[in-house]
Length: 421
Image (cartoon, rainbow, N blue to C red; front, side):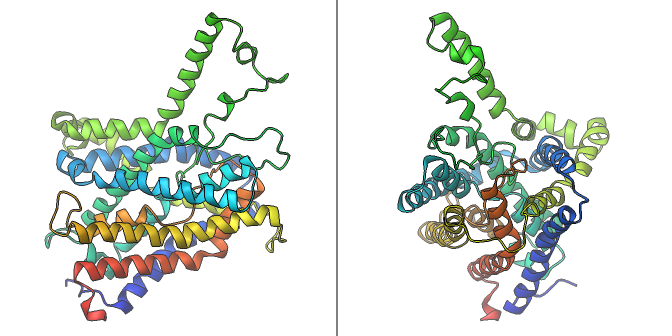
């Protein structure tokens, strides 16, 4: 029996169920640290598995199996929204750093936490949880489309956006304020490409910007200006480092999936159930990919669990940037982002080439401006720990209200929300 069109009460129930799935897994990671099960070594191994195994498998199996030229053409606004929201977030971060009179390091912390939000684990987990709820009805584009196919379409949109963010992340980091080596309060070892959240933020180039050689500085770096020969060698080494940062396992897997998905002959070899490669490679990657979202959410909870005390004593220097980031990420950016997406939808109402008539696409586009900051699963600095604790544990009801707002907006635009008003 086909589920009826969603009402506000059914959307509220779906929101609670989906949010409980995401927040519940995060809380498991939090309890795992507090109980001593997730030791620092296990956390580090888990974070590396997420980055180097789980996420690449998810990107490859999901994008490669669902991507085609039509999808690429339709989703072109998503990278535009990613860049636009990153610029706005960076401006808000820089503005906050100036208003709060923060050091360069803390300003960099704010800007990175603002620019890079969690557009992978949280929204993908929510979409997967939608399948068992009535909310998925507002996203179906075809009557014969299964709920699993609808969810897969949404996950593909989000993962393509994630891939784009991963690619531009090192370039964004290169234009952020440099760390101040004289700042004794520098706790802004910002989320790097090793984050999930992406994925999670960023200091992949911080070691290249060091202009004050010390005893620990590699000799080659200290000889930067000695001769043209050494400069050429240094540039070559730095270029290799930059290339290795850009071509991380998730990016390599995602780009490979794009190439394979756009070439029918290759796609049939990897994603045709009758193909040997599908049986012995792709199927196994799909099994591993299933672990990506829960393992990432557990890692987020483990990060939050590293906060030493449940009730954190107020520290102005530490908490002012954190409060500012939370307000911007949970309130200001969602309002700005949703307004921009809806504005584009209204202006280009009959232009399917600009904003396609797809509720799931609209939801994915608005998600790019929402959700908490992405985190560095390796970092243990106080600012990141407290920010993670507040964003994912203390303020978890905000995730529920954000999701309810997004679902209500999408349902109203899709014309399936009339019965709820």
